[in-house]
Length: 425
Ligand code: SF4
Image (cartoon, rainbow, N blue to C red):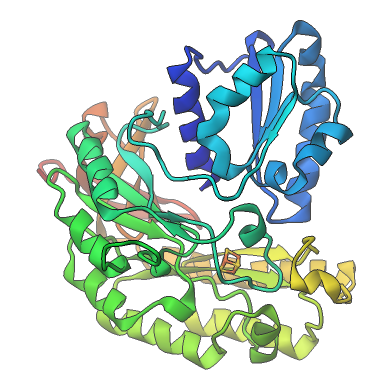
């Protein structure tokens, strides 16, 4: 979502005559688009600001956007005197006014949470890749998991009308984009608050009808809202890829309850079983937090057991860190850092073994791959189930759905040969 926000910011800046540069030294404006989901990410913002401070002497404007901007607001301007403005994620489209204010010599903090975050169809988005595009369908979150800062930095859930989403996807398909990823903090609650009667499966059906588009992905799903209707819809729509990110966060019911996740381990496993029954080729990935307040060895063991049982294609795992304003911030952060570190490396090691095994099972298979990058004769793309696939071949395969036979496998990369004549139209 942050990557796509950066693309929106670049689009807004393009309408004002700015062009992106790789050379920081020649920039008139530097914006850091930030993440506050973990303490470590937030620390990085301040060290990065320290690093770019030297550009300031040349009159360059410096802005901080994203969730740290939202969280800190005016405090950030006080703490870092050389920052000219802060811009929350729901204020992206206020950037032109902010830059006008700066010309009058005022430093600005723009962090209203009631603003519209959603892509404006009149302002272009400067996307980084010409074949795969992110499209925002909803933003914000009403779930208030006890560890999570997102509802405080991105605000409450807002869905975008389906006709706007379909219009954006049509324009992308007309420009030659082959794949869209529908984005939202919790796409499964898409439709809430809209005048039209629509849910996420209904939206998938509408987007599926866009001509010229080949593949549809989506992130992220909350397991409690991952419905049977959604599974059946994915199974019935050939353009929807068999890749599902289903963040479990923990394997112990005691910890899931303390996290406020509103599902049990058993319910989570039922959803996984339902996915595997109706979409047998689906790859499932997940997120985990280790060392949540009160997590005991037996709770952690249940998380490891869950990894073994589900055998995810991959997981993102992090040590718990206290996030201000959240409910868990009121509890003692009582798992020692050394234990958190040990648990994290244990979990990652286990998952590495599983990922190796899952990857090795691809050897000899033929996959459909959308190549989106080419460098020195090497193509890189993703399979329908989101594996990174590389192959030697000419540029002409870029942006096409190509058949690739997998010859070698690494943990995060499948290496194959192109089956000539196997491109989809
Ligand atoms: S569902 Fe929970 S973890 Fe995900 S964004 Fe909302 S509050 Fe955060």
